[in-house]
Structures are given as structure tokens and as C-alpha cells.
Length: 118
Picture 1 (cartoon, rainbow, N blue to C red):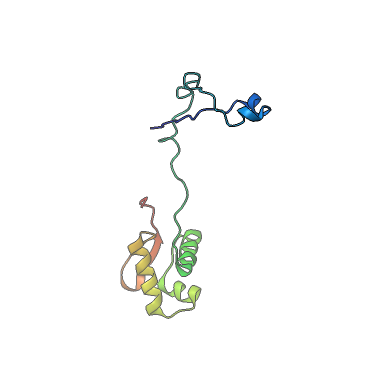
Picture 2: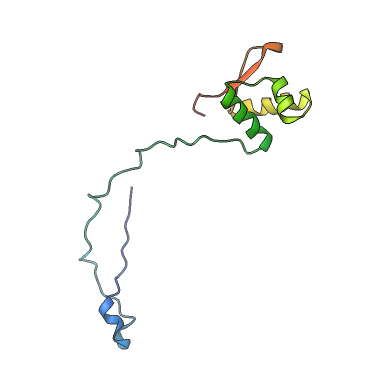
């Protein structure tokens, strides 16, 4: 829905006369109806930008997973320079946030980019 509210227009010729400088002309009946000419873009183009995590560590992991297809806990430890416990916590947080999806179990767990459309 679009609503246009037009104010009175200042007539350019009135600027030369100092007595009429603040005069506003009434153009209420003269405004063209452009609503029919404007395209409706409200449902047109979907938002194609990828939502990135806010945390710098999570951004590194997300970028790595995007480029390589997946990431493991061991790769996260190497990438971030943290211990296994912290790496698992960050990955778990990213799964909860919808950025990654967990595949596998125990030692064969990998994390892939979530493509479910958040």
C-alpha cells in the first residue's frame, strides 16, 4: 500500500517579489495521479543476501564451511586456535542459530551450511 501526501507547491516566479516569497500556491486539484504508472515491487525481488553470524569466530567458521562444504570440530580447533570444548560450544551455538546443520554422530560428526532458508 502506498499513500502520497502532497503539500502546496511554491511557485518559482514568486521568489523575485519579496512580498510573495512565502506565498504557497494551492495545487490540490492539479496533482497528477501517478499511482497507475508506478510498478508494484512489494512482492517482486526476494532478499538474496546471506545472513552472516555476528560473532567473528562464527563468521570464520561459516566462511570455511561455505568454501569447503563442511567443517569438523578438529578443523574448528585449528581454524580458531581454541580447545575442543570451546570449538564444540561455538558449533553448537551456530546450529542453534540456524547457520549450520549437524550431520553424523560422535567422532564422524560434520557441520554443513544450513540451506533450509532460515
